[in-house]
Image (cartoon, rainbow, N blue to C red; front, top):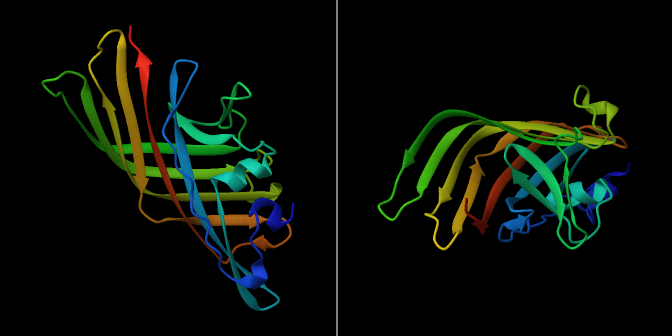
Amino acid sequence: MKLNQFITGCALAAGLMAFAPQSQAGIVYDKTLFSPLNITATFTFDISGKTKRATGTDKDILKSLNYPSGTVLAYYDGDVYAVNVKDGYADDLTAYGEVYVSLYETSYSATYPKSGGYIYNESGYLYVDFFSNADDVYLDDNDAAFTTEGDYTYVWKESAVKNTIYSVSQSMKTSNLTGDAYIYDYGYTTAFSAKASIKGSGKLLGP
């Protein structure tokens, strides 16, 4: 896989080019809230003695896995999915061994508003990883891969049930993530950093 197949529209010779992650409201599909996962990664390579940089996003990950336009990278219950409501699927990319968001909480709290429902706050350490060929042991056994780690904060909000409907929202933010990356045509990066966030909301059918 060439780098510009993974990092759409980004020419290394042009230096660093920024791609703004696209956000949207949560996706309610099959009675479940899938929250869009936004990733922005910066790759630095040494090519013929020159430093070249490029950036890629969650949309580039989906394109590298051959998902069509309209598919969204999303998070639900510890796994990452490729969700396409129009075409009617939610593929579990974590189960496939391709994309991971692993949260390890170190502190948490919950509050219960008088209006009902609850608010859950969590913070800790996370890993955000991508393996184009589903080989999570060696980066260079993939056409494109990266592993990152860093701190995060997470919030889940849930309202009281009213007329069999209740509202939910979740968000996750990271500080600067660091790690390693590999692209087949260019080798390992000399430096790699990333940002990741989750944000979504929707209404679900109550019990």
